[in-house]
Length: 212
Image 1 (cartoon, rainbow, N blue to C red):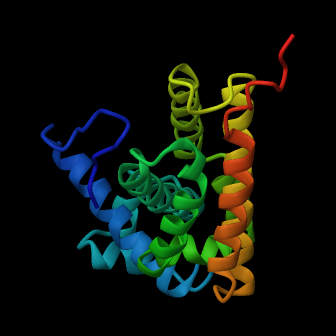
Image 2: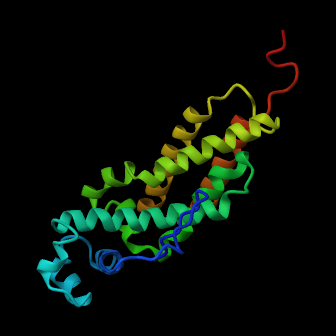
């Protein structure tokens, strides 16, 4: 798993300590095992064995199984969010949310743990997903994109960027969860609907609207 972020900073070249490498390895294994078998069917001891550690050694990095699971969900979801933004960051604001939705849905095929969470198979982790720091970063990045395109006249000037981005984040998460739980047969139709809505909302106002 890469430690790079796409918010303009990358720490790939920063040397990791042995402890950081061990923690990273534990997270990688936990993401794989929890994604394959779920929280209840996966034990800390099997993750420890796969990492070549004792169970006690794992608890030096994570206080308990719940903390390890939460960290694994954070890491898996953050990877998807960061990668999607890296791919969509040049997309015009009016098309940004539909593009992100498509990228998130596509990424679930390669991220079994996140797929389990958004599909409702790990209900205890849903609140963790809603409060994910990477989602807040995504919201802030979307707000900055709105401000940027308001300055160039590509987006209507009367929208509150932060309020819009917060709503867009909620819509993205809701659509991702519903698509995962209901099925992907309506993905194309949903994406077209989202594209139409956001294009209409963000489109610059005609000159006569709001004129004094």
